[in-house]
Image (cartoon, rainbow, N blue to C red; front, side, top):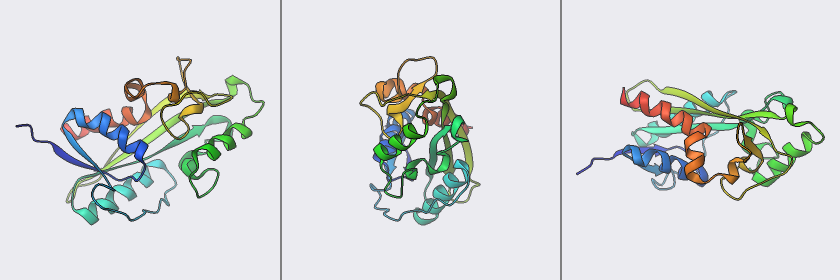
Length: 198
């Protein structure tokens, strides 16, 4: 009998939960979302960095449930916009966290900007909080640039406008398998897996 290690993911975002499950379950983790464990509180993200927000979320949930919790804070950093939307990625166009509105805002801010000036990266900070242990963090990223219009039907968030470097596809044009090999979250999760196994 294989014993699965339980990993609670501190998010209410179904897209993130799906990615965590696809990446961690083959590594022997029984992934549970906040909804699956009945945790309904919203954790305020007041940090100034992805890492600070990930730590806040992981520690708050771990304290409440007394189990290992993995939290991420991730987003899009666009060079021409001084790193924006950054930690405000989900709420870039307002508190309603509307993916389409966020995409439209980014595209309007980059209107008329040449491809070479549209460089960007998806960044993901992961924090793992285990009761009685020090919280550990890792960061992953993937480089690319911003498309002039949305393309693709997969993924979520800014995926339809983020063209992966060295590919002519947006994240939303990649299958889950393709995305989970190269994404910022996959990069961070690989690093986290090594950290947890050490």
